[in-house]
Length: 222
Image (cartoon, rainbow, N blue to C red; front, side):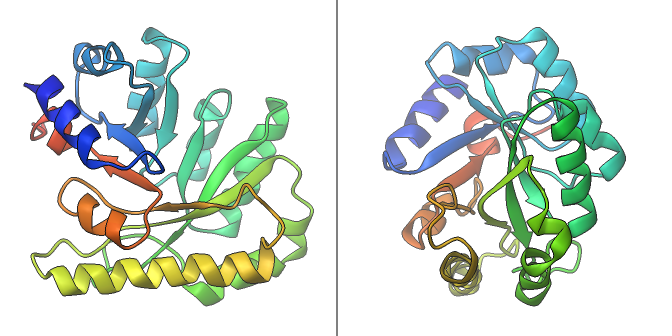
């Protein structure tokens, strides 16, 4: 069933949009089934689970860390993570830079913005992000690459609200692009849209969608 789901989702996503198959809480066998269809981009939201899966799965998988990241956990994923979606503070970015340097890597990151009406979601304001990007700390970092923005819409059936929130993130991206990354081709990603709203996100300019339950089925949390 999940292969049918995967193929259906894949058909709905334009070629210029990256699909991150979100495999959190799902067994290795489920990931391998999708991998064997030729898909190599997977997302996890917990560091411990990501490390465990990285160790046993094929090494050409691109792993995206999509959940809230604590600074003391960065060291565990720094050797291999492909993209960190949820950078929500300068302190976290400094730790990523530090651990990337230890591993002789440049780690790709997205800046996470709080665009939802729900307080439970993480993310910066536009003012905070601008302050971060102007800071001497940021300007001295050699081992991170800021490649775009990420945000999560409110969990609601109100499509207009979801669109409005996605448009806010789209606008934030363009503000940062014009002010800080005008000549940086790497800054090109807008990560927004999950299983319930990825088609709306694509219409509103998303370049990366994070789709889990629409591929793997509903999660069973212990």
